[in-house]
Image (cartoon, rainbow, N blue to C red; front, side):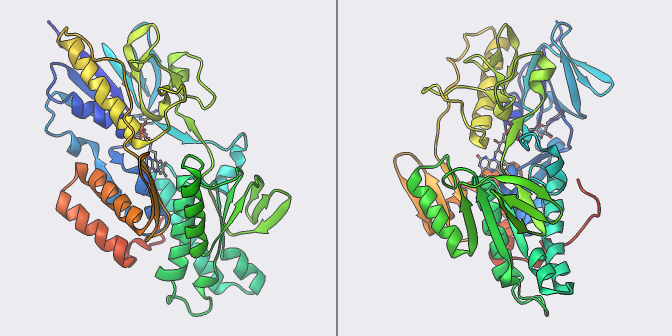
Length: 416
Ligand SMILES: Cc1cc2nc3c(=O)[nH]c(=O)nc-3n(C[C@H](O)[C@H](O)[C@H](O)COP(=O)(O)OP(=O)(O)OC[C@H]3O[C@@H](n4cnc5c(N)ncnc54)[C@H](O)[C@@H]3O)c2cc1C
């Protein structure tokens, strides 16, 4: 009898976790991704601010799965699913499946202003990070050569839009780049004159964290000389700057960290998405009426015990991938399935620069250096899960602690 075919679309946190869980299973597993590498998104902002190099936060999918002899990898962009014929469309090809796991993540969202993307790039891919890095480093170079003070100040003004974890991390890292790493590198300008503005439409930064930790994050940002503007929405972004509320601010670099939208999976599956494009799934993460299709991670809308959708976080995607793998293994063995998916929240962390972070473990809340050390430990252990532990750890620590100049390269010419 032919072995069941399992297709996993997306090799991010959710897809890789499902693939790991199915290694050695009595099934032929195909992992499809449009990129040939798995990306550790939580440290993308470090690439964007020249703290780390791209290869330090990404690893080839084939290398990660090389020992799973029942799994193969296809590089390609999925653009549709035929639920009736049970095939996934990858460009011109069709890949048949008996079970399908969709884990294609999310992309940025400009609230109906797609034209802002060109001037206010966001951070989702390595190409975005190197593009933003180029913009930031080039801004200092242009400021060094600026003919007048007004132009110089515009180049030295950086606006980060969105006060969630990515915006806070970006703003803190740009401020540190200016105040520490670049401090002695220029002759005409003083990089510490850089103005870093973080704009958040809501009343506080890190709105998903408890209020006391938002306050702590705000104080840490201010210590780093980040100017935080709360309760003010951006109404225009262009080449020369931004309009915040009704005030114009001339700025050479804008970075978007304000909104995300799920991948196109709902369209592929022909189902009604939720407000941010996610596919509503059953408690076992399957598509209603299609027990052979599962949607996980940032692409899925899954409710927690209080009726709230689970957040778009790496641990959520990882736990869902592991759960689906367990469920599929029971199906392959014709055994009783596990009970429905339940997310275990071990805590949430966000960093603000190199010495401060906030950590919410529910039973204990931390901020400052201790939280930052924890943040570092968690990210190192997560990151090195797929590469040589010692080398990556030393490499990462060295770059991180010394502001190694190797990553401060201006590369490429075109937008991503
Ligand atoms: C800048 C940034 C910082 C973050 N920081 C944190 C953090 O500190 N802590 C935390 O817990 N979470 C963080 N997150 C969120 C976390 O990264 C996501 O929740 C997590 O990656 C979701 O996993 P996923 O498997 O659903 O999607 P992803 O990890 O995004 O993976 C999706 C995969 O699908 C592939 N794909 C997409 N479309 C297609 C297609 N059409 N065809 C083929 N392949 C496709 C992509 O190439 C990608 O490999 C951050 C996210 C970003 C962008």
